[in-house]
Image (cartoon, rainbow, N blue to C red; front, side, top):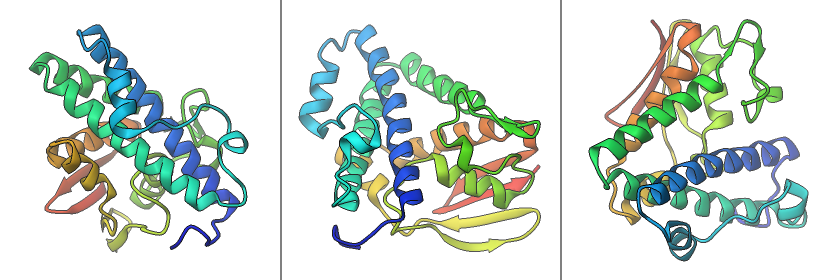
Length: 219
């Protein structure tokens, strides 16, 4: 997809919300790094990754070229998240564990259960199914929240049924960001599992990432 191609308003809005969501997580991790002595860390992130402007979608995305702007901000956001996590985790095992606990907390804060999403915390609550009773519903929710490239590189479904869904990525943008900053993509997958397991814990679902395949299944 080139920058002149169209994207539906719904997909554009979802992508922008995913960008905002990961940036809020990145800012919290970076703030923790500052508290741990990385006094200029936000400046370092800006210099190495760029920054996404503050504001609502209609304030920061040119309606004449939404894909171009969303692609740029997606790349910036993925780079910032990767660099923040990698650099702060390297400070000490305590810092790495703190990141894991923070991601678990974010998952719990965004749980969808009891027939209604947590609208105070869920970034895309109005677009997500009310209750992720099935692995397929949970997969759709995860895709609506987690930023991993642009919509033109959707995951490839390997198999799905009433008890599980298995997929693999078709894009490599997340891996490229982690490689750029010398990180281990297995730690990203560990954080994704922590987030998903806590997000879907009330719904009896589990998440795994092994050998390039991702799976959500009933417990």
